[in-house]
Amino acid sequence: MGYILSIDQGTTGTTSLLIDAKTFRLKGKKNQEFPQIFPKPGLVEHNLNDIWASVEQTIESLLKAENVQAEDIVAIGITNQRETICAFDKTGRPLANAIVWQDRRTSDFCDSLKSQEDFIKEKTGLPIDPYFSGTKMKWLLENSDKVKSAAKSGDLLFGTIETYLLYRLTGCQSYCTEGSNASRTLLMNLKTCQWDEKLLELFHINKNTLPEIKDSFGHFGKTSGLSFLPNGIPITGILGDQQAALFGQAGYQTGDMKCTYGTGAFMLLNTGDTIKKSEYGLLSTVAYVDKGKAIYALEGSCYIAGAAVQWLRDNLQIIGKALEVEALALEVGDLDEMEHILFFPFFTGIGSPYWNANAKAAIIGLTRDSGRPHMARACLDGIALSINDLIESMRRDAKLEISELKVDGGATNNNLLLNIQASVSGLTMIRPKILETTGYGAALAAAVGAKLISMDKIAELWEKDKEFIPKDSWTPFYERKVIQWKKIIKKLFL
Image (cartoon, one colour):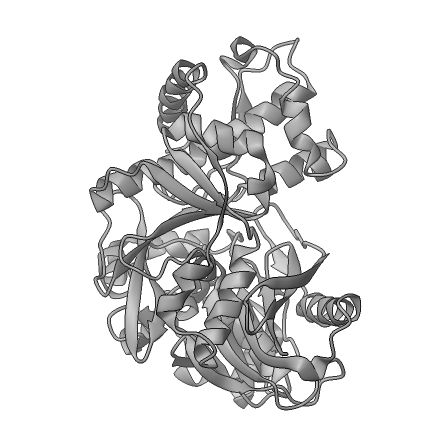
């Protein structure tokens, strides 16, 4: 018997999973949160030592809890928060805090590039936005003394989180990325899946400071010099978190689609070997690269989803745990009480389809009788209304009559949220049995890379848990809400 270890390094925490290498059943998982660093409004950072410690500790506690020997691990898969950028030296030592994908510090630089947006979008499939990694690299080169010094001495390495973890796991031997992550940097040519010389010149990035781009499935290196894993375990699959979730939802065929409700919410539609250009505020990205061939996706991005519930918990302290938001929201007995209340969860700007990096969150329509339950319900409504914008854009861009949507991520444990989303968007929401779809997708990627399973067998593993359909009694209310939402966004945020 053997196991696949999946490392899911997310925005607020790290989850390690063990998957049976024969049945592909989930054996166990461990999660650990780590601190979020907010130096100033709009700035979000992570300490890479905190991230590495969370990886080490979740793996150790998982093996102990499941009574599995590390020697029984036959392959490792990695998935990660995508656009967050790391700067480290050739010994693996961090040179600065990681700048997180939510960070807005490069807004002014992005504004200065607007005249070249068509050129950049044609090359990369991406709009100009602080969300993506290239602008963060440029900022570090200009503002971090340690990064500047390492660049001058030839000791600087840039990478998104999976590259940093791979480098550390392999004893600083393997310095690589793959197409789904590289496609989020503003530096990769979407057609060739290689670093683009003209983009590197535009962002003043030396190619020697960037990792090699490889296929998503295959041999990335072997563990070496670790206290918590033996030498020689192959790392055989890497995908960015949203692409891993698509893979975990068996979304490897053209037309497959999913939406992940995590810290943010991200909807991906597999477009096969065709780069689909969006006319309605979505972006084009790599789903995965297999045997040198890229499979692409259309993506819609909401920066804040589950993080809005965390804000209620941590900042307003109106709930003690995130899962309490559902019961609190259900205390609103009559939807008429919510008629004018809207929660716009734009704490880190607006992504798809509006792309306003400078937008701020807002709650409007409160009255003296508004209380904690109304705030909780408005929060869930705001998440669903944000995602509805993605769904509408996807319908228009893909020219599809979308009637159902596979969903995953921690926030989909919330039945009320999925009932709201179904009613707002007129969809059947389908939740799988395995909600840890991101980590599960990384395990499947590792299995494909290690030749433990073929791609066409993945669909046989997917299992449905529950469906959520629109509530007829809610439909008129949410039809009015969608109209209010769009009017106020145009008035206040654009």
